[in-house]
Length: 91
View 1 (cartoon, rainbow, N blue to C red):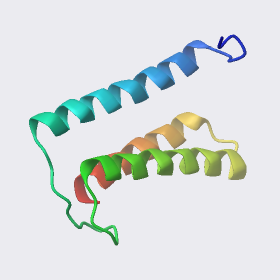
View 2 (view 1 turned 180 degrees about the horizontal axis):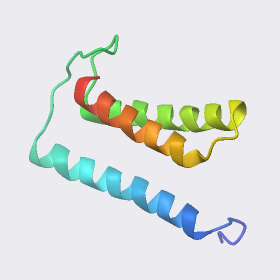
View 3 (view 1 turned 60 degrees about the vertical axis):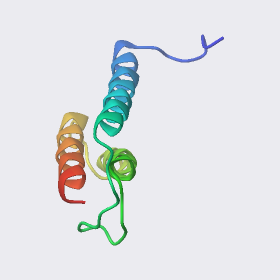
View 4 (view 1 turned 135 degrees about the horizontal axis):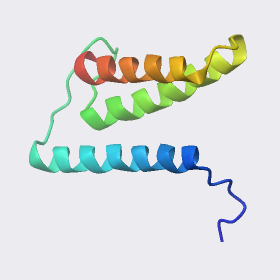
């Protein structure tokens, strides 16, 4: 059924981490429901909104690193994680 996908260990870890993030955020939302708030983003957002924006931003950060440099993607990952943490806290 999904034999056409290239399930390397890196791909498996990537999807497992995304699934764990979504599971943790779901449990966190059930335990401690949030309200919309306005941070430095120009819109009112919930934790889930900020997570989605952060994950989407991480994809663009990685694509930008691929397009403009030959630097290892581990640097892009570090930048993405820092950006996600800033966005979740103050976004």
